[in-house]
Length: 225
Image: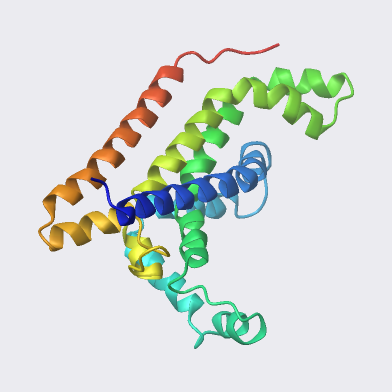
């Protein structure tokens, strides 16, 4: 019989991945739009910084996030003394770290989707007197639906497997920061292979379904006039 701790851990994992995906979807569109269609100083550096989590060891990012959260740091001290907020070893803390660490998995598919749309579609919309916002909503978004789905799916899938940055920033607090990836490590360390297998199987099935979704929409992209 599945115990409550198992369910709570999976729910917390889904909560973290869900909120991370929603937040990145909101901030991802304007960032991707700027990177796809605007030229500005240090654009290459901005793109490199956004892509850093893909090559940077998670523990490195987690360490620096923990330093920022620390009351010994100016920002952490401000949060603690002025706002009575503690980010280290809290759900809010791992959520912020998760958003930063998952940034490229949302931004890059959106940026690629925008760049793949023929410029003539945007120019035609502007010629008809449509604003940038209207053009984005009514012309660009419908033509990048596969990229949006890919970005959301990849971000969610990446979040449910996060380990290094979560363990550094949030530790292993049941009901607060103990997500499935950390639980698997704990169960293996405790020689509870059956429970570890249950966690692993759930994550495997979710990841397989997400990848199947991505590949099923790949190649179906068409331009909507």
